[in-house]
Image (cartoon, rainbow, N blue to C red; front, side, top):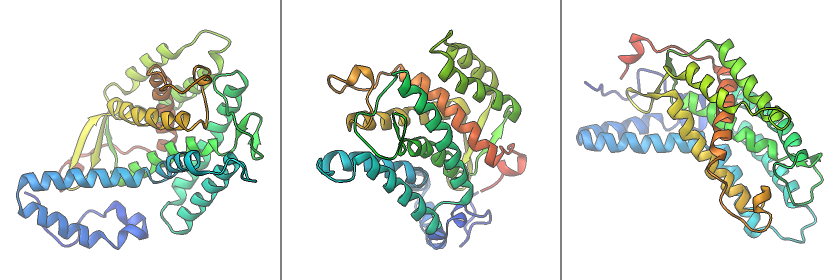
Length: 302
């Protein structure tokens, strides 16, 4: 039976963000009203709650995608400040604003910084070997890579860290952290080495399946925990990253060689690369949060 109370017995993830904490009691009242209307209304309310949580988790990534689209359509071509440099300064401002308003925790900021470093290093290499290019000029750059690009990778880390907290992740059969770290290291090395040696991605897919094949992700949208295979969850995240990459190439922010004569959608084959990168993202976030095993007491929470 669902318990009705003015404030949840289990501390809400919203307590982590002062901006959201003020709405906890009102949100609880809305939930109770939905429950009184019956299971269909309660189910619709939980679905709405899921969407709002996902939107909050995507706050930084959504802001970056909005910047890409906004500057593509409205940024003056003759502006003294190059578009890439504006994107870099805007990303810094958004980061500072989120921390200043306590919409982002320090743990999330640390995760974003790690992703920025890891992503920028890979970008420098990939642009040098011609995997993709940044066709516009900029002042804030490292080699052929504008510095704002690190924030695009950081968006993935930000989403992972925020979703982990918002959905109160628990796991069943999560592999040892050392094994996941070795897998992510192998994936990262292969992003570089496959240009000079055999591409090991299919071996890495099999390793990921062997490591995470039995792992179940438990996530709490509202009263109770829901569950899904972790690999399915990672693949769903990969699909949304692929959509975001299409926004990036559509706006001409970066281009693959096949897009130099005209834009086309990013090939679905790129999903494999992004899936492997999502695994790296998950492991880096888990290094900060450290996965918690699902227990019998968690299953009984309402």
